[in-house]
Image 1 (tube, one colour):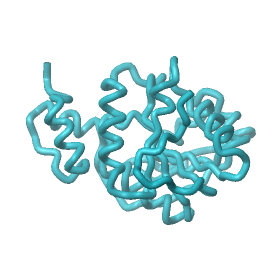
Image 2 (cartoon, helix red, strand yellow):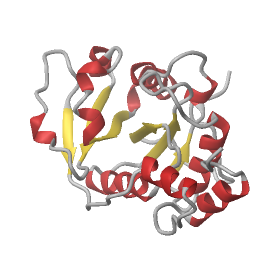
Image 3 (cartoon, helix red, strand yellow):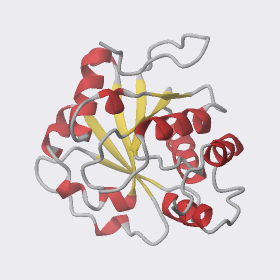
Image 4 (cartoon, one colour):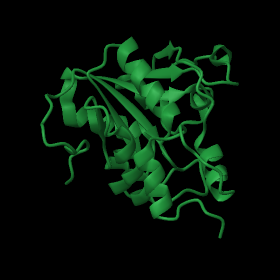
Length: 210
């Protein structure tokens, strides 16, 4: 059975006590994801942030091949040794649910780690639609990061939900949807995602119009 957080570097970092988990399709990973991860890591004094690309996202109908998304996430996160990337959701069969991922991480690390799930304000505002959200209260603190156009103050936490912390990040108005559209139109995406990811998109012909 694959470990939830496989080592992707030569050095073997010590097990974290405060672990941030950022899930998403990462189609592709972009600077907004990286700024959010860095902001939360510093604000909450985390030891590490692990990016977990979804395998079969249950709330989306169209998405790129999981192996492409995993590769781009590895390339995007490689610049910071405090980041790791896991394929635990890609290797899991069936729809991807955050509650299952956090429970698996808790089993892997044991009770010595404090888990924080990092998500954009747009995703946290839909927390009531998350599958098994009540299960997260036993394992996880949700970290809602600000995002242009989304007012996290509209969120009304419900009984049984996990604790929620708000972290303000610098305004970075970039989205994976916009990146895909720009590539399809032949427009540059410099500055929107790290250069190794740009090269990967180009070399593999991703997001081009059919």
